[in-house]
Length: 543
Ligand SMILES: Cc1cc2nc3c(=O)[nH]c(=O)nc-3n(C[C@H](O)[C@H](O)[C@H](O)COP(=O)(O)OP(=O)(O)OC[C@H]3O[C@@H](n4cnc5c(N)ncnc54)[C@H](O)[C@@H]3O)c2cc1C
Image 1 (cartoon, rainbow, N blue to C red):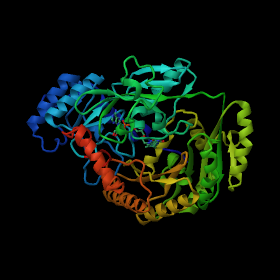
Image 2 (image 1 turned 60 degrees about the horizontal axis):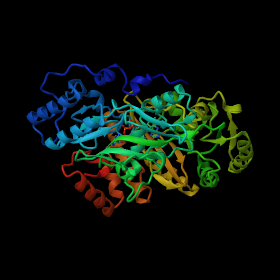
Image 3 (image 1 turned 180 degrees about the vertical axis):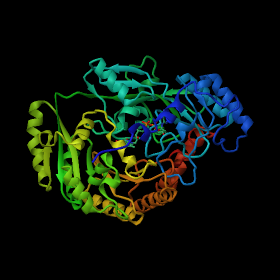
Image 4 (image 1 turned 90 degrees about the vertical axis):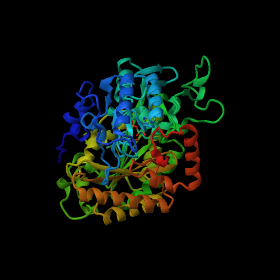
């Protein structure tokens, strides 16, 4: 079996998309012709706002015509009503330009949707939560500002990609590792962390390892969080909490400011790194694996965020669905099991790693392997699995390495590129996984979609990562995917399984599950900071 699709096209980096994002592409003239206007704004007012923006960033960095802004329209999410199109995009080169853009936005009541690299794939990419916002694309702000090798910290701008940071460390022979999401090469540490994304080394909970921000507030002022606002500060990236209320969290999954710099902690490269996989044969093993893994994670004997991969998810990375199954409805466990076995996979394949000195890894390995074998799995290493592409993929990720293998999933069904992540959280207990897997399979089955899912095992919690894969070129299927997604959110939420993060099409629905007091609190902060509602209205359900 082989992945016979074009990865660049799947990512929207094909010729059309790439050209649209380049500077110097012709506009329709000085009067912009956007696909849609901001709500309530006349064409003449929009033209004046665009002229003001062009005066700040240069004409070639405002994309205010349907043709020049088309790459910002791309999204894998189901959007049957077409509610998530921006009116265009503006790409500043500095924090000072961001401040001036914010002033213009306040003047015209133009809503801005900030993105760092805009690769929030399966959550909406660069598209906004409500129609007609202008994407504030920070990709040109891509400087690595500081690397402190002794403290293992870094300060970056939003447009820096994981690939760029990785290359910088390699080129300068700096023995520090980054921690990446599975789409690291094209994504941004700032964007990923602000959406509270996850990677797979011991530094996998990205917001936990974030330290210090510079933020442009909705009134155009610039603020540094934590120790960064002190005169002569030298601990901005060393001490997270600063003094008084801790505010960095307010700028994640929110619309209270535009982050223009962010600090992070990096992991010192360990002398020894050893990746493992445990293979479990049956779908029903799901609970046993988590119960065996939990004590090892809580005690940090296994220090990294594990991925417990369902076989159908793994098959979708390198195959078309039609390579595996042509039947009606959801793919059956029997079919998945057979295809998995042919690829040396079980129904669940869990990847973890040990890090340290030779002696440390040798001492811990038998303890870990013994506990995991007791759950009925086979513990496998590079020796047995070295040539296996899935083992290679995870062995790369768990040391902060980069690849784009997983992006193939968006071509599992058809050519339309349909993917919506549903990511409910649960306590790291086997009984919870059994319940979540059964409910997900029931709802997906009702709508004819496949259970292509994994669990990320954090410190004490699970992120159930369900990829709702559909063919976006089929309007009926897109609509069905949308309904299916909403039913999952609603029924999981009724059981206390809320999403840790969601796409632009379901932010309001998810926010409604977290209670009226919490929503009112978020809204009060919003009104106080951003009375004109110019930053990302609708983000996380906050208007
Ligand atoms: C196959 C596949 C696998 C994936 N695997 C992972 C994974 O392992 N882990 C994971 O976490 N995600 C994963 N993703 C989801 C997503 O692609 C990544 O999280 C990616 O890092 C997000 O895109 P980005 O870094 O370009 O962030 P952006 O799209 O730039 O930003 C994300 C969001 O944060 C906010 N934001 C961004 N920058 C700013 C700013 N400067 N100021 C204020 N707000 C801002 C915006 O609301 C924006 O929509 C995966 C997606 C796919 C398709």
